[in-house]
Image (cartoon, rainbow, N blue to C red; front, side, top):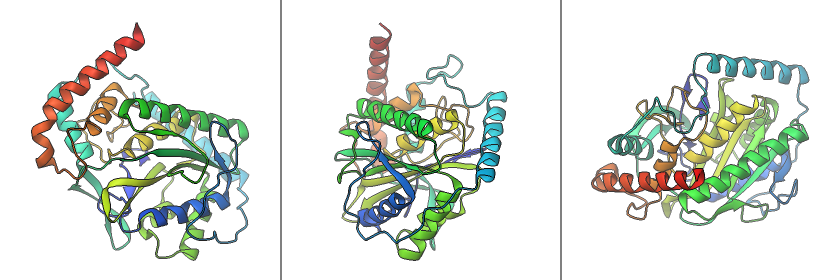
Length: 345
């Protein structure tokens, strides 16, 4: 969750805010209703036409007409926020800054805090900020990504957002080795939605009315998001395989300026791979409440490589993973250096 003044991690419906008890069915419900409120999903080969079999028929609704004055006011507000962050030395775009060096020990510490702790817990259908130990979670099968854009979003902006998601999908696939690519068919299990405030509230209201028992904490967070919250990710797992993700839905505000939205794409998609938490010690990193860095850094790429190292297993606790982490971090850092040198040569 990317916010002004805080970056909260991935939201889900249980300990990590991963919707284990609701599983893939809840995700399909969210996806069906989102489709009813958006232009459609965009992929590299298609600007519309997201086709899947929803778990239940979407509730009939009239697509909300955005309040143009309200949208423009929010766009101005978010532009001012981004300008203020930049003016105070935040939202930096460097991936390997000279003033933020780190060691293997730093990587081990940061990985444990970011990958093996949750930032929120679900208490009576509400997400409460409370850092707690967690199990290692990640993807085990193909990840198929689609973009859905609200009707309020101009076509040129939608195309840019789509291109950013597609480029970052390719980057995550390269870093993690996961079979991850853009799609627009029934196998989509990773949705990135760009909605303005009116569309987001209509989406939450439709879910609550049609499916009141599905993922209430996630839906409540969607409805109650303050204007400082730019984006949020919701992860879903099946009860019989709760340490592997089965689906993810990311909601990004449509009103912020390009860099803020690109930062949301980087952070939420990276966290949705299995890095749910933030740490004040992680630097240079997206996974830090300071908002100092806007985009995925080389440090963060190393954390992702560590997450998908075969020596680590889904379901591990911090205590179980800790003896392996130094060697895993060393190897991941070396691979990262080699990749960087290859690109630069």
